Image (tube, rainbow, N blue to C red; front, side, top):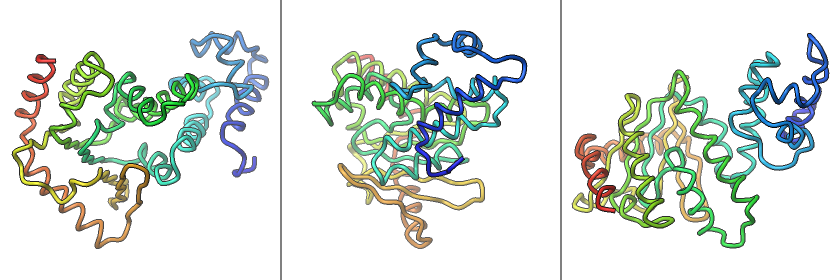
Length: 270
């Protein structure tokens, strides 16, 4: 099939084709829905390209149809297409990374956001967004977090500015629940979560977020992002310089334990 075909359309066609050509018997939508534990209407919407694809559906389709990750890969392409051009390569590479390092001076990184926090962020960024658009954006963001729940998640290092913890995104309950989620993520054995306190010296990376993806071959791909734009960085000298800056930033941050104490203190006070 043509690689240039719209991945959402291909997802629909592959689902319908696999269902109708199922080896044991031709499956109708109701039978497939039972096998993947969703409603018939969900399968129907998927096959006519209507509405978002539930993030847990692609791996279930791959399991039922023995398609070796086809639906998961198509879903990743669909999710990447919902992001700005400068973010798409990151969304494609992220699931393959063996280690991810994040610095965020303004917001909780997308990999650690709750649904309510993500929704509040998207609503603030686009007050005219429809309910369907918000649901799709939030679903795409939460789907990224699947890589942290797999059997072999990447090593994750996150440093957030103290202002991220204190910023009131979505109201007191949304903020409290997000802080609770950060405590949970920070307790995971493959995650190191640190807070850069207000008392630390201003880091070189203060003006924007930074993500460092370490790929299976050992090379690093960096992504910087501002309010409306971002940059992919692969130049070896720049990668080395910014990676060193991130190491210095981590050294200036609170320890893992002290960061946990601060997050818990702010959560209990909210």
